[in-house]
Each structure stands twice: as C-alpha cells, then as structure tokens.
Image: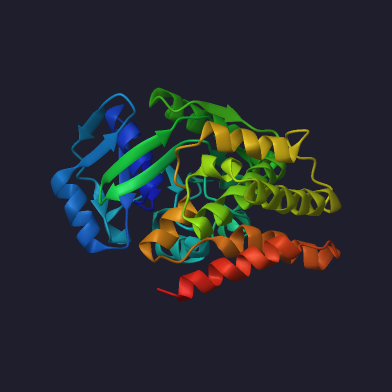
Length: 305
C-alpha cells in the first residue's frame, strides 16, 4: 500500500518518518525543491523526549508527476493551501485512493470535495505535537491519539485500512462516528490556544499562568461553543473551557502551530480557525467579538513582517 503525504512541515515529516520506520512505502510531496533535496540528502531526524532517531528518506519530491498513483493521501498542508494542493496532485488520485485530512481548522473537507468524491474522504484530528527545528529535523513535543472517520457513510469501508496503517507505525488511531463533532471539538481547542500563544509568544501552558489571559481564553471558547450550539453541534466534551484548560496543561511545553508561524514570519491559519467561528457567528447572529478581535490582531501581525 502506497501512502503519499502532502506537506513536509512538522506533522508531515513526523508521520512520514514513523511510517517509513515501520517499513511502509511512504512518499512526501513538498512545494520547495530545496527542501526536498535537503531531506533526500540528510533524511529525517526526530527528537523524542527520551532520545532522537534518524531515518534515511529518499521518497520526496516537489514534482507531483513523479509521485505516481497513491492508495492513501494524507493532507498536512496549511488549511489555506488545501485547494491548491489537491489541484496539483489530482493526477495521482484514482477511484481507489483514500484522502485523509488531519489538518487544523474548518473548510478543508469542503475544498477536498471539489476534487475527490465524498466516499473517498476521511477527516480527523491528531493530538500529536511537533515543532520544526530545521528542514527535516522535527521535535516530537507531544503524543496523543489520531481520531478520524468517514465524511459519508459510504466511506466506512475505507477506515480499517488507514487505522491499520497508523497502528502498525505506532500511531494510536481511533475511529469517530461523527466527523463534524470531531472537527468542532478540535476547533474549540485551537481557537482558545493558538491566537493567544501567537500574540503573546508563549507556550501553551503559560496561558493559565496569567489570570487576564486565562479569562480571555474563557471568553474565546465560550463564544465558539455558542456558535457550535447554534449550529446544532454537540461538542465531544461537557465543559469546553475545562477541556481547553486540560489541553493547555497536557501540552504545556508545546509551541502552537500559529505561534510557530508568527515566529517564522509565515501566514497563519487564523482565517480557518477563529475566523471560521466569526463567519459562522455572523450568519447565525451569534456575537463573537473576542474571536473577531483576535483574528484581526493576528492578521495584522502577519503583515508586520
């Protein structure tokens, strides 16, 4: 079974390395040829809490035509790059290909539907945390479940092969019955952590160290939960604020992806995270002033490079 991972950031490299270590045929597709050349030459280096490990990695390219057909495609590109990524690799997707999105934010499935039939799409989230140290060098900052499920009932027959692939690589995988609940559950966590850590340039756990910041996080999450409720989405936990606080504690030393992006001068996924809450809130007439303010601040920070 051939797996192609789209995006060689922290998560893409981490999953590629774990699958390769398990002896799986896995390819990485990147946009930057220099990055591909570096990883092909140096391999992938993963820093774990106990020890680092290295694996040679030659199956990487910036040219989609060299990938060939794929049994499984895993998307780890930024949410705003989803449509472009799918368009560029359309030639490697057949009716046998399963496309898995483990990306942040909302809207990814909608983009994928333009290129892939619904029954071929699986969507989910991962609780693994990873930071890029340098090209092909990743710090594995946190371990957790990867949870995913079919977008439509017709896709249920595809989940078993992906679950088996992950578990054979040491990636704990769980099947979700309702993908929409899963994605909103992850979104609420992201809206509470990502923008605050990016703006304040702090680690996840530090949000809880400062009462005004903690209170702001509560307001962000409460707004998001109100929007989810208005949409009829039942979140996968009873207390959204407590859930986000628990994640802050569990990932206390993590540097969020949005924080990493701001620090590196890159565009963030704020539009698909807090911006998505604001967009839904406007349509449903649910006030989201704190999320709106944070989206504006992060978008301004992107311009102040």
